[in-house]
Length: 366
Length: 180
Image (cartoon, rainbow over all chains, first blue to last red; front, top):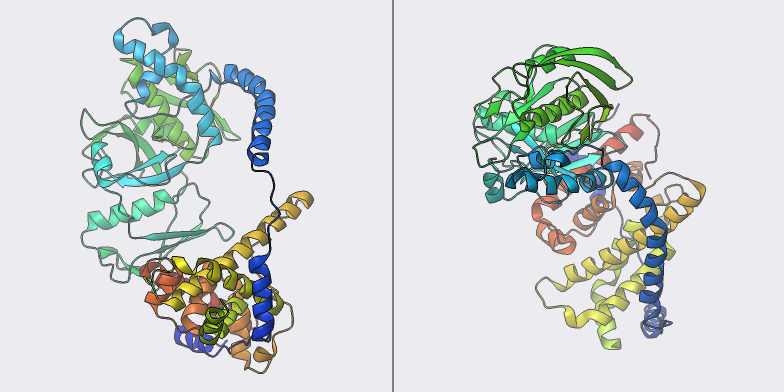
């Protein structure tokens, strides 16, 4: 089989013949002149806005009643917030008037249904930032199509995003992503390279990518420090990670951090591993040590957990655990979780008496 | 106005027509679109500040006119697709139409490359035409497209890869395939 190289292709392209226009200069000029002086049929200037206003009024008349009835139902939907700011919205309305902070928590709680609605309906952009000690990467989802600036990332206790000068092109049909680095790219340091590779893999997670190809404009591979020249990366696979908590300092938000699992543990094993220390300097267990998980049943994307525990130390502890378990269960291919034996019916907008639908984005920044 | 038109025609007409032709691969359509380019140029010459060369400025207008055409075509196709529940498709190029006479007389390799351009995205095709048919530099191509030079290089790299994959598959007996 004859294979061409890049030079052959370039040479063949430059041999493509010139294509001449057959229309004469005069005919072209007349056509241009005619188009240039052609008057556009004008419509009254008020017609467009008037029509738009009518359309909006009709849509509002139809959708407001529907939305109001859905709004009632959505009060039982979970919030997907995971940061510190999320915890107030997880407070139940009964506690609203107890303390000053609880009032604030209650206020945010009343906003929870809208947040759930937007998570279901809106487009989310996920950008990945290394943690401060370059041990884990933190995917953060926002409605903003632009990543955090370096300053904002630092404010959040994160490091600057590493993929600033990298172009990522996703071919949805081929389920393939092509990641192009600058020609002169030559990274130093194993930690940096590892964070870079993890950043790429997590930014492409959930995008239906089966192949991640690496290249540079003039080369089909990319130097990756001790890993040598790489031309591809494996996409994130199911069950490869569990979620623990990352927090740089007391002032910065808490995020869910994917921490690699070892071997091929089951979901039940992983949930119990989430109460162990380890994973990085700023990583904490996401499950309190008094909690034990047993998987009652896991089928058709629905896992039923039987949870035994002692007294919950705080609502915050409970909610962060629910968030981490939800993210981990989703990463194991689940779409619903029943939290059995929790001893509470509701936490942070999660109705724990019913199966909880797992939202796709986590670490959501409003 | 006539004098200005004549000046543009003398200096750039064949290049502009050729750029548009290779973008849309339809002679009648290219004739129509090149007229639109002149209309835009004659209407907006006062906005040319000389930051880029006249040639790259004209190519950038030709590029926009062509992209506008593809968008209109896509909107029209989407409306039809919505009605008949057809799937999404990229810009339509007449891949199965007869080759133009200028290409027919070329070698098989060149014919393959001509057809391979249909496998490229609009951006990739733009860069291939600017770089290899019009002979523009990376810098000039970046002025035409408004991209960084790095993006031009990247797009060129991907375009060459796409063309190579197609020509390899055809020459290897894999048969022609259509992505459009």
